[in-house]
Image (cartoon, rainbow, N blue to C red; front, side, top):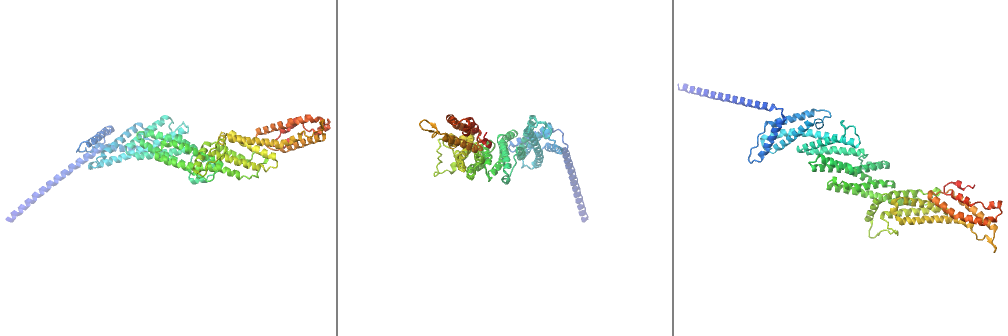
Amino acid sequence: MADTEKECDNDNNNNNLDEEQQQQQEHKSQTTTDDDYNSINNQEEYNTLPPDLLKISQDIDQYIFNLWSSRDVVDSKPPDVPICVEQFAVLLEETVDDYDRRSGKWSLMRDDEAAAASFLQSAERLSKLSKSLSHFSSEYKYAFSISRVGGVLQRAMAHLEEEFKSCLEDYKSLQVCREGDEHETGSNGEIVSENNEECVLLNLKKLAKAMKFGAYEAECWHAYFASRQAAVEESLHRLGFERRSAEEVQKMGWDCLEREIVAWLRTFKYCSAELLTAEKKLSAAIFEDYPSMSDSIVNDLSRFTLAHLLDFSNAVAAVTTSTPDKLYKFLDMYEALRDLLPTMSALLRPEFMEHLKAEAMLTCCRLAEMAIGIIQELESTISSDPTKNPVPGRGVHPVTRTIVNAVERACCYRDTLEQVFLEHQRIVQTAATPPEETGAAEPLSPFGQQIARVMELLNANLEAKSKHYKDPSLSLIFMMNNGRYVMQKVRGSEGMSAVLTSAWVRRNSAELQQYHKNYQRETWGRLLQCLATEGLTTGSNGKVNKPVLKERFKSFNSVFDDIVKAQSSWVISDEQLQSELRVSICNMVVPAYRSFLARFSQTFTPGRQTEKYVKYQGEDLEKYIDELFDGSAAAGKKK
């Protein structure tokens, strides 16, 4: 019976245990059901988004205020994340999705001003929310919201970046039309006007501000730089400048290289005077609130552009073959680098400006060395021209034209060449080599000394050539022709007159006059000897020695005929010199002949005897003299 009671007690205990487990299971089941119900209700509450963005924005602003307020209170517990954060994120995300689905050339900033303003406000609010939440990144309950808000912000910023690029392209199209004086339509069909530009600039400024506030400064910088870099390159291309490697420049023929240099000069001047300054103004307008960012962009854009321009000038300065016809383009480049680069100091940071100045200075030195070499090479050009090479027609020798024209054009750059030669003299001059003494009343500059040496060497070369003419008169005509050409060039060129000085001009003018006098004495003095009266009269009664008089007239006629025959084919190219010579010859010969004729012509028997010996009258001499030096053999024919 005891065993029976024991078994009954065990059964009762088991029953009680089963009842307790069943109650616990029921309670657990009930608890699970309640939690599931609450979770479902919360999820439904999340998914039921109110359509009022304004209300959600106000809630977000309040939440941001609460977050910042909690930071100022010691030991304050930060507020929980309200449902409006997820609602705001979803709304903004759907807005971005809607914009991304748009196709074609649709642009939020250009095509929907009201929506653009709302989106920019929402993006700014989202940026503020992200920054506020990030201060509580150590709090576990904020982790999901920080990630969620950050992801949506990144998508919003990416869309703003695309809008920023689109606006930059719109501005570039308007700029191209304005530069090309096209007033019809822009790239997207809009009427090109200042209002359009102002509108685009305003949108760019708004977008830049939003991207900067949203921590998208780097993306904004790169997008702007890439767009404006492309715009600058297009402007350079329209000016005719193309980027060339040093190898390409070295292989160019001079005609092609000269065109490239002209385009480079035009481009370099435009960059310094307008293009880069305009880029600075544009950047300052768009990034008005961020001057350091604007300065950084302009600095890199200017450095990039100038580096390409300097690369070309460096390549040109390395050209190995230099001839006088290349001098002037090299000097144009030298002047551009010397004068224009310093004006760009406002565009570049000091460290970069110093680097570019140093590079430009090196290029200038190379161009200066080339210019000096070309000027000095004129001496070799003269020396290499054979002295046994007189010019046909006894006119201006080709070497005279070559040298004088080269000097004339070089003197057009006298200020620059004065500077170049002065710097060169300072480098090469030592105490053992004092300055060259010229003996001139007016001291010559280093450049003037070089030009004077060239002209003296040319004169010596011409003197040597003139000695190869068998007729001394012809030698003098040759020297007069060339000397007159030189003096006309010097007097007609302000640069040559200034470089060679008035003392040089006076000295060479005197030499030219001496050639003239020597010619008259050598040629026409011999003719006047035939009119000498010595030996024509005999005895105390002064009777004319008729046979001697006949010989005098015969000699005069023969000498005059020889002169006219020879010198009728000679050429004096300068009309003034030609006229001066004819007048001086007439003044020298005709009066003397008329006097001699009036005194002795009656000695001959009128008729055949007079016609035989008195071949010319004074008017005849004037006629033949007036036909000399025109290169026509017909002048030697008698009437």
